[in-house]
Image 1 (tube, one colour):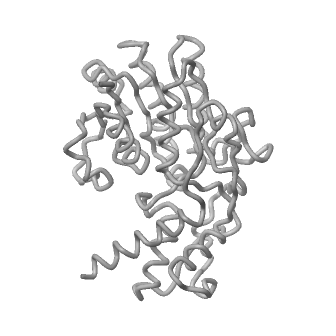
Image 2 (cartoon, rainbow, N blue to C red):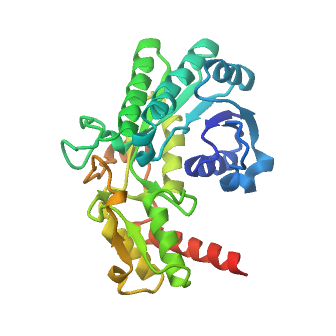
Length: 323
């Protein structure tokens, strides 16, 4: 039985990855930070099947001790301060978690067992002000937020440890991936939750920022499969994971209202400058041909199916809460 250590296991991606690994008969160990609030909502159905260890990406000693105790075959580093707007409010903390946290995990691997295979969650936000479209593994990075900058560091330190120390360390440059488990602070979930509330008469408007920003949106459940596949290859490498399709925020809003059976969406949507980023990323669309060719990976859930899935989940949740 292989053992996988997953940081950020209580997040959206962590929950789907844990399900995948358990289905493949892994021993799954999730690293969590000590907190006074319950953060296990997304993995509550897996609590009895996952082992939990307490650790902190800010603390080198705790990371090294966990790796020493767990002795994983694979480590998936999904933990980060991952909400882009917050990275302007807390740029130093974002750097500590999202950049230097990667180095601490790599140092723990190097100290304890260099044969451990390591996955780093890189991000399409690294491309920022894009130099070419679509973006692939060789597209230059031009991040437009402290989060994007921190992710670039995490990406390159992973490459550096692979080339300098021979570690099996790879990065998945994942484009936007969503699900009903996405936090409501993210625009996609904010939209589907808002639409569900309007449909049920619980709200009258949906306040958003830049409706013209375009993203490549896929389903998180598909993307964690690519993470796992990266660590099963003979040689470590980096891969873009994306659908290759781009849609604007406005298109996402329209699809969400249509999924709820509401035609005239524009009368409910209010553009609020408070939600506009200081430096906007206008267009992201990925070229995942390398992942398709080398990993045999394909996305299965399309854009409209994803939006409908999220709207229906929010409708069901809100209806259940009213009973």
